[in-house]
Length: 157
Image 1 (tube, one colour):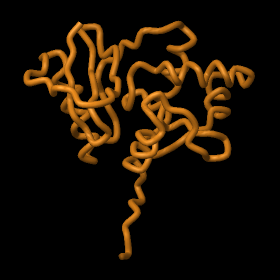
Image 2 (cartoon, one colour):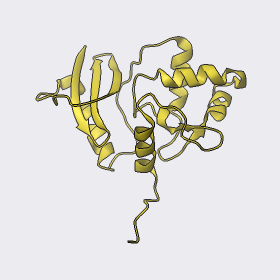
Image 3 (spheres, one colour):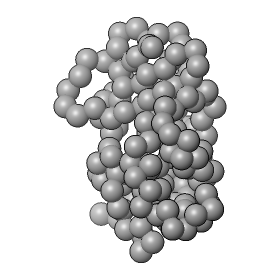
Image 4 (cartoon, helix red, strand yellow):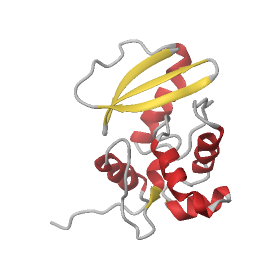
């Protein structure tokens, strides 16, 4: 397993993966040393994440290999269907996987998503439009959604 640590507008991010694909993209708290050398197997995902943060990428095309249960993988696969700058409620997410009674299980699987940003669990919100839980912190969820919003708010003053 190779790993790299990069810095982003939402803090330090650790990327882990190997020839089978990216297994984790996680937010790190506090200060960390940025990787001086990016392992070759992770160069493309680092490049694509940097493009995303610069506002020049709306979709990722890297091989993913998240580790989890079959149900978690089903939920994470469905997250990939939420388009850039769009959101979906937890209820809509449960309908998309075909089990409206599984709302708590879907929310729990979202919370266990090991590949932040690329598997966009930040795009799932409460039915009332509220920013409900996010393993990376609600401030990051808010930032990511604002970053993806096609209508940028500007200050008049």
